[in-house]
Length: 314
Ligand SMILES: [Zn+2]
Image (tube, rainbow, N blue to C red; front, side):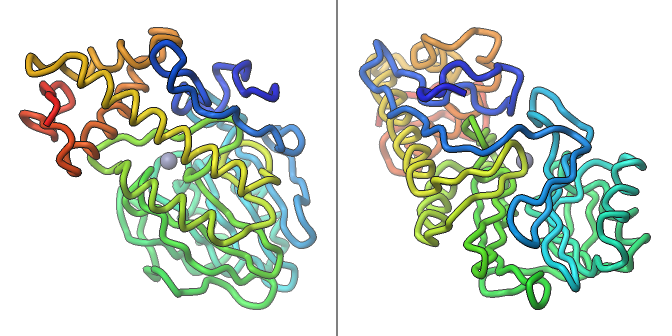
């Protein structure tokens, strides 16, 4: 992608369609997305991204998954698998083969459908323990984990970092020895992340971004796209971008005044530079911002749980 992050493939990492896009009139533009991402990601490739850490990308490329969901294999003597991905037999076979009899833990960042469905087949093939924040959306875990817990042993050990926002049960996994954070969908390469209420929560998301930034990781290993090798600048951009977008939403709301506007009208006012085809996705983020503003007493929604409700400035 280019230095300003604007010419990425619109089909890639199809997440929030506004990486650094300008607000109304460009006044609220977020800083450019830093471009320090390493290498192409190709479905089916097994790549050692750091000593003892391999990435196997699942064969599910698409609008919402970019090149495909990254499955990571961490460790040498014993292996922790993060996010096995979709239940595609060849993909499960490839994970089992790469694990060479050493897979002992399967850790899930969250329960969206491109991350976990290979888990039962992989657990059956390996006997590995399944670990996540909770059993949900069809995933059954052997052990639930939260802040302070560790998954795996030796050079397969990762610490659990709760990161609600994209999903309420989202976890990142911190490999302190390698300075590597496995970010799932909390941070992605080349695009911002969809925050879709009610399970998605913008205020929680911003808190989680600050928590991740404070770790001082050397690199981020996302579930979609290549490694991110300038975590501080990249996450800083994410935060600035969200705050700029929030300011634009608040400004659009002030503009409509007491008459109010529905979420769609705010989307049209804020996402002036984004193709209307992407507005249905943008709508989730705007709704999430409006809910956050309402929680802070800066906006009022007739029914904040209804995406089509009418909003007014508080
Ligand atoms: Zn997700």
